[in-house]
Length: 194
Image 1 (cartoon, rainbow, N blue to C red):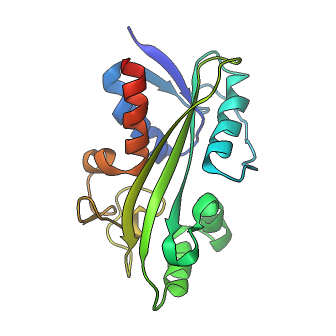
Image 2 (spheres, rainbow, N blue to C red):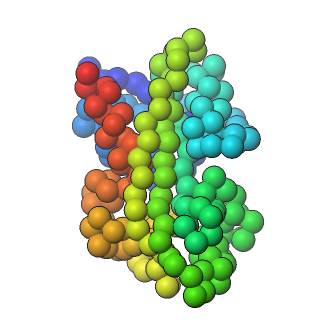
């Protein structure tokens, strides 16, 4: 039997990643677009956990399914974990990801390029349920120039240490084993399997 769940995102790349990883467990994942919901939740939290909860809680009040939401970001060591919580907003402020890449390259001139992606998933089963959190980190470094066009967001400028490959060059199946979101989702899968 299919299990229905709602994912609080309009990000097509993120939605595809969740579906790829959770569909084999029998989950049918709905997005706001699937249910014709137009709700923009302001991310006013000061942590990934707070932001993921704000989104999950807002949607759980209006959808009939358990809700998943995540907040994630690229944290660059030499920039005090910037852009971090502001990763997508930083890209928007630059006029898009290609411009954000160039700005980060500029800020990193002569500096250590160590970085990591971080993800926090919030799962809210019912409106009165206690939220559950699942976190994942993917260590790596920032490249000197974009590499490939796979993935989304900052993937083309990120080199994953664990597989010694650029995320912009790896296929979706590979990324879905090693990404920060994949690691958080693996913890969620274990929870669902109990």
